[in-house]
Length: 455
Image (tube, rainbow, N blue to C red; front, top):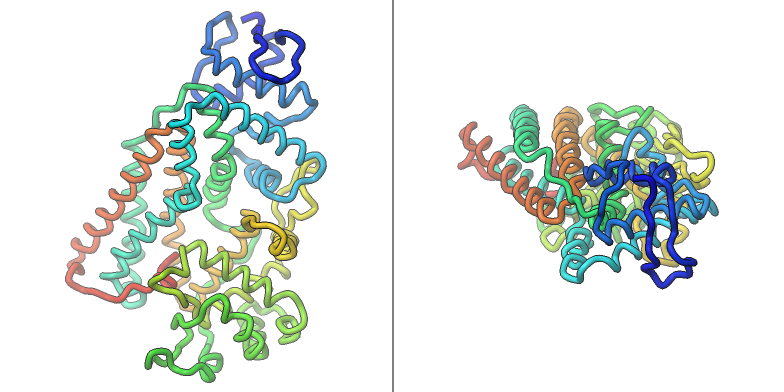
């Protein structure tokens, strides 16, 4: 195809049609081939008008404006961490232009989508049904089966076996449903792709790092006596409070931290081996950071809930402060782009900026800060409960799930995405039930407490 001629199809002020050689369009066509699977040959061929408009929008919003948008929105790869920070952190002057161009392309493509199909797409990204919500819902359903019949301590070895079994079942399911048929209509595939891009980068980051924080120190099991913190807490509904007993809401956390700052600081120092004082809690910003680390952790396990409005235990408080202190000492730094990255790339700066903005506008915590603080709180919680081995085992299942979800969502297929995610959840609940039955545990029952699940 020597050239593509676009007729004037929008209300914007383009003087007549635009003529572009195939060489000029090479980068745009490469992106569209990779996300849609459509050949888009470099020879003369006819395309639907909506496809032509998609190519035009990508070209005019990148090269004509002197930006490198295509390089920043290409499918996730080695630089997912960089791309995620550019796409989700408060923008710099340069990255702001990129994000505005991305929003403009989404707006232009949206006008080409029928109302019913647009509603279908919106349903995939509804706050109650986001990709992460499907994932969390699946794991919650699995844990409800397993932890109703298996004791998290007494059956720890069985839970390790369950993770291996469910990982194999996930890989087996993936082999039967992939490669999933891709959405070939360019305006639809590009629109869905741009709306799911942050999630796809997050999945790729979790796959490539095996859900670990790069260049970090992961805590192992440790014996720490939390009884001193529990002494002053009165029984709740007749139950004496132990380190692992949920009894507190997020709103209760600040007062508890003030009242127990000295003991919390002593435990954080013992657990992390890093110097820590009560003044760090009482006089500095660590108490606020720990509260938001806890909030991120709770969000990652879909708590609080109507059934469990007070999901926080003493162990979670200590784990959250360990997460905050650990970050300040280890200074895990994401990769950056010299041209586009924000000065807020370090996770603690991301968190502090989020805290400072919280009263001004409703927005989520930046994904990398959310991941690092919630994940560290999770790791320290399990280490303090002597469950680090179980957590590592569960990690392999989550990585396998990330690979599966990446394969499903990169199809950009509006019919297959909800169908396969729902089918996978049913498949895994059935697999969990089968595992319980295989080990003769179907008649054994325990009260399942989500806040002490494997998360």
